[in-house]
Length: 354
Ligand SMILES: Cc1cc2nc3c(=O)[nH]c(=O)nc-3n(C[C@H](O)[C@H](O)[C@H](O)COP(=O)(O)OP(=O)(O)OC[C@H]3O[C@@H](n4cnc5c(N)ncnc54)[C@H](O)[C@@H]3O)c2cc1C
View (tube, rainbow, N blue to C red):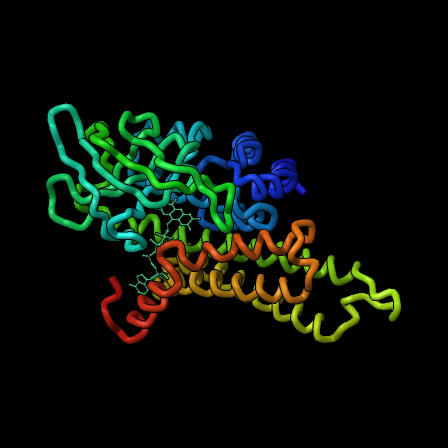
């Protein structure tokens, strides 16, 4: 195992138990040069390997790569060179109290004045809220027509603040808190893309990478749980029968279903990345499918892992219940599974998707 993964694995239980940000793990990723922007294939591989050990670190990294991709595509030369040097931790500040999971429809405001752009917002969920150095931030357009605009918001901007802690069911180290902008002034040059052009940034830059990465987080959680379950059943004895749990055909069949579902989801993610790299015609369908498929598979595989490991699974040391809780988030992170089903259904019926 690489040095940074050892650190991530060593801290995972404490991060979850105490709901604390995995500072050592993010520092280890920075030291390994892994906070620099990555290709979709590398980003997927990295977040999957992180998720096998710590879902929180994986999701923080996923949000960082998603925010970095926008800066890489549309940011200034200074922002790009600082990102490449690993000086930043970024995240997406899209979801809002007003439009909830409908991230494509922000209701927060941005107004252009002489001294800059004034932001007013109530963001509902921002991963790494108290630890990020910048936010890729959505609002309604400042002056143009369109649904949204995207801004580079430095974390130290006066008026930008996290408004709570995070005591969640899963991904407990994520620091995913609400945030506000109260007349926060950013530079006019902080616009990423066109004023009013936020939707195309969301759909073309963020969505493909984000879906592939959140699907990979789900695959990593399934992989970690499947390995933990196999280890548990192989080492757990019924002394009076001189057998292990693995000697039960029912248990082995459940494990086989977990293995198949994990590998199916990973294959779909890999095919999605290939479709992205080659510009294949079905690329958007695959992008939508991979997050829905992997997210739903993760909840069922983790459910099976809890069953296979029995009462022991309720204890932290088996390593299944943490992943069971972590896996729930992927299905409700936007685009949620139900929204994806709607989009996919429209796509295959020849209807307009967005
Ligand atoms: C751990 C965690 C970290 C997060 N981090 C970030 C972050 O860093 N940045 C960020 O911007 N957001 C983040 N989010 C927010 C996330 O992307 C969603 O916006 C949020 O989870 C939606 O929750 P809600 O209660 O607002 O959902 P609601 O919008 O209230 O949805 C409730 C239910 O209605 C369903 N629903 C809503 N609309 C439709 C529809 N059109 N069709 C079918 N069903 C629909 C949903 O699928 C869901 O099941 C995070 C969320 C979590 C859980």
